[in-house]
Length: 358
Image (cartoon, rainbow, N blue to C red; front, side, top):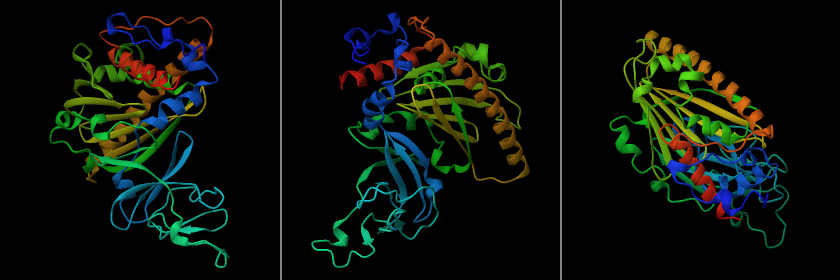
């Protein structure tokens, strides 16, 4: 691992002369630990939409960089992120999502916390010396709610406002908070999480991998731009009325693992979760505007079928790329400055993150 984290590999590169990351950053057995420490523990990750935890006691369970978390709607309507680790002997407080829970009860010994994270009861601890229930509280992670999307950070993350600066202006009157959760599809992909992100960040492959998508987009006017902590791709689209109709396709990537696919009438969020050096899980959550007519249902069905087709094409190529990276043949190649500027942007953020914990 130390040989990988050399000044040569981590030195910033100009876009005009940039190469991709070396293969070992996708294949070395030590990378999951490094990514957890350098990237995921020091950044904001999207975890859900506010509509998924609409009522007091609604919560979802997740984890970031190995830390189990409960993302919960409290009685006062705020959203908090508690460590899903009992203060007694580290048992799990919740093992699955829940609706309108009245309390949080540890599965191990039954210690029970209120929705404010404060211990309310502990079986058979009444006569324990110097033990006060209200002194025991679940630790919290940082939470930010933006455009209806809930983000969580566990360590030295940047100020959240800087992470999304400028996106509101680009979205204009369109509010992502107005959408409602529809369903989730998850893909288990045999590649390093960074392979999947790299693939998302460029439209260079669209004419070669996605014939259906390519027919909707105007590749000649496909533009990719970068900001401090995110990048976005956009293109005019033309499709049948039962799909998206006319408008813009907007694809936002928020470092390190969040994607927002915004098309007329639909928001799709992607979260890329490392599962090992050569495996990741990609969760696709679909959100639609509040309409239930026959035409709306038809558009949703068309959208889901079309999206599934595109994702399977991406999964196939990402798994093939992982094989190539692991083959011993690959030497980091030059990036296309016009089409792969967002890949370069992502790699520069990674190089900076890795440099800070050498």
